[in-house]
Length: 349
Image 1 (cartoon, rainbow, N blue to C red):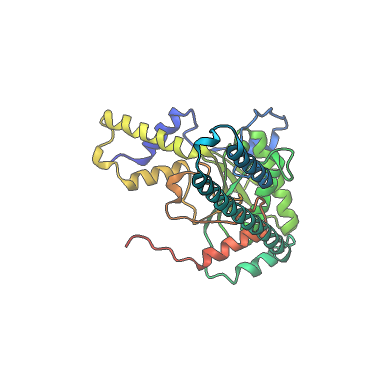
Image 2 (cartoon, helix red, strand yellow; image 1 turned 120 degrees about the horizontal axis):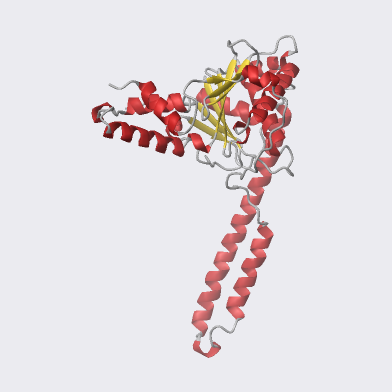
């Protein structure tokens, strides 16, 4: 049976990626030049951008236009047909109004409830407060993945700085919760496109951890980009309290396609036997190329949209999100851990 590194090596060579894991910690310590970053197109928006009252007015306008317009001669329409027509439209309008009112009341209730949870569950940048919440749980995920959206620069906590701030907070919460690995998924992969972004992320994570744990007891961490096979450490020590992986859509379907092409080429050249292509082999290669499968995936979007998250890695993953929530906040984080603690995972029969 072919050795796993052979397939991984071919995949990385075909994508112009270093075969060996490249440690850029020393280089990052001396880089002081800013690198211009190309504009990044964000993932498809899942937010509602049309006012409900605008929809209602348009519906009424279209109804009146179709009812009293001159599309059909009046003499060709019987009174019975008009009554049935108006009656059906009246029922549809009533249903629409009821659903619209219900949805808006539900939206307001959820926003108020989330605000209440945010105020009552605020960690106050204290690891001891977070530990008190976590110690009550029967189990916690070893590998946690968070799905973040890149907001517009004009939005509150938006742009690159907002994304970095969210990752800093998630890192502090994860370390305080004794989570060993944190996987950050962002659709465009903005922070993994240049060394400069990685250096900024490392700097702000260290600064934020200093606020939580004190400057004399800052936990160690590493930031890895599986797509480029790069890693950077918080200091010279390779012993870390948490490993942070930055993945994007490239680590999903495109990686699956590239792995399939590589294995096909090896099979054609007789370097890989067809009987050796198994689920276990594919799983091993993807774990090496992308990373481990998370135990829990938290989406901080208002609706559940996986945004091309690597499909192979969420086969057995618990997924949690809060409807109508758009921000990364501790209340959603701890509620996700609580749900994971109470869930029962059945594998196989």
